[in-house]
Figure 1 (cartoon, rainbow, N blue to C red):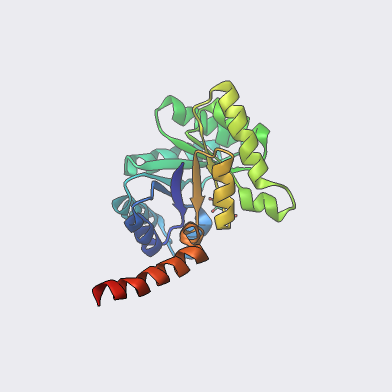
Figure 2 (figure 1 turned 90 degrees about the vertical axis):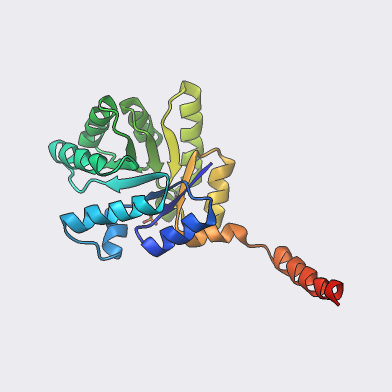
Length: 218
Ligand code: G3P
């Protein structure tokens, strides 16, 4: 399973990259705005900076919501760096844009996916990644992990190449649950990734080893 970090914060991206387990980055307009990134050139420079830090795929979302605007913006983003994956919303124009980019060998991430039907369309259109939003489904008393499991099963049944990228991950437990149902990728805030490191028996066991190592040096 690939690990992406879901942030536009350069310090956190660097920290995750330094761990040696990072496979890519996802961003969205809310995450970019949170970092205070404004204006066309600053946006492009920020994506360039992210690509300089990581080796893997970097999802950059189009701001346009109409077909022509998505095509124009997506082509510009894709030309920016070969690590860029154009992130496109799950709409009628979005599906048309994903098919256009598929025919041009430009990789896409279909975002804001909340149903199996939407995931089916994304795969049919040739999306490189599909992003079901786990946490936002849980927020409305639905089951985000269950949707990830359904999409994984559907894609395997039909042999679609689209990778299932579990997004809107809110906890370490979400990462584990998405891994258990066979997600190809999870994209997560740094804290939830770091949570995988933690176990009280590791801490107490290490404390004992450190204590006993002093006897060995005595
Ligand atoms: O990748 C999409 C993700 O950032 C959405 O997360 O927590 O805003 O639902 P959240």
